Length: 579
Image 1: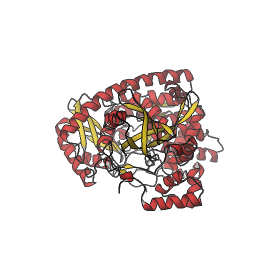
Image 2 (image 1 turned 90 degrees about the vertical axis):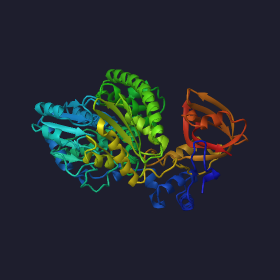
Image 3 (image 1 turned 180 degrees about the vertical axis):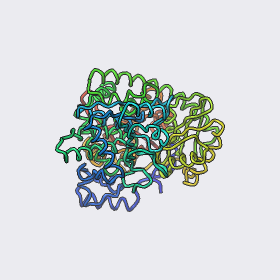
Image 4 (image 1 turned 30 degrees about the vertical axis):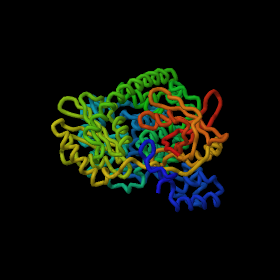
């Protein structure tokens, strides 16, 4: 049954509220744990029981952090790392070019520097070298180093790691493993096929952090004090959110603690990023995912691949400021390229049909650095797994994004094993691939077939899930602070979304090309500001702008808008329907 009777909203979605059982549990939690009903709704949705409420609202890292040695090869990896440190061996860090890779590398570089040891950073060029270790780079590093640590990559790199025979190689990764492991000294990865899967939600930066926990433990046993690991949690939090790792289990505690560390403004690179983005409030998960993340990623997407890792690892404020400015400029350029590719990809996907199990598009010269973002946009628009490929010569390099319940990484890996792809892999929600131009259609047909078996083509527009009903007068800063105690919110832990019924619009103004600023009221005295990003990408924008005095049910997420030293409640409006 639809919520507030909304079967098809302005964005074509059915509104779905909490079921009877969740409402019953929320009511019981509110009474037994003495928490606001709106907070109780969130906890009930997450399956939190009354005895677990205190621990959930105040997650302690010491209680949730797993023993690093529960991961296979961890002891071996940490031991070899300590050995290299004590023998003053030459260490190289080979990292992926995204935020997770950069944050992972930065942790190792910062930790080693604090121990008086400098390591070599190597990040492959996205266009010239592609993702992960390659034979020439690994051979060159092995010739000059004793230990190579591959972070956020390496699990499927059999040939490149074999080529690094003159050095020991440690892999610290989280991407889906194959049936066999590469010939590395250690492969620490919660998504190895012989792992339990209990820690499958960790990003690579969290795996690196766990190794450093074990390294510090081994050093303590030798009477040596290692660096303060808590100070590295800002990097772990950034990677966890930016890599869209689910905010469950220990990830919640890592992000919450990391945000506290970040608020202290001790890391030169993150301070510079905050300043270039003109942030004047403490960072939130939104900041990590949509302000810091895209800028750190911009170097790997369209600029120099190592800019992000260098920014995150530097302790020189002047260097950090220069790097942040450069990344900010590259991010603006990236947005322009993305918009052009996005329009072309959507046109092509629409011509092919948006109701198939897989939505895909391929174009000549589409920049490899933006195909993943465009795939995410197609996925959001269609509620289907999406793949976008840039063609160049005889090959195409692409990236895919998936929807809940559909494992894209495993399907792409299977198509690669069947030799319809040159290579491919990733994890459930995101994956990359390289395909021969002549096999493009066959590969996409086969991938679509595999995704259909997982139910990918059966969903209509995604339902809009709501946590309950609020009136504008009840939306206070105090309530928002209470709701945030159930956070952080993000992947796997969606931010609470409420419906505000029968609202009048007292002010509406278009902002930029696609956004809409509003003031809504209950028709009496209570008013609330609202912002709707991308409103004019659908019928929503025109409907609200040309309201003609009509009343609407509106739905969205509450946030605090800080401006000029003042704080006001704001609704980030997601949808609306005539009342």
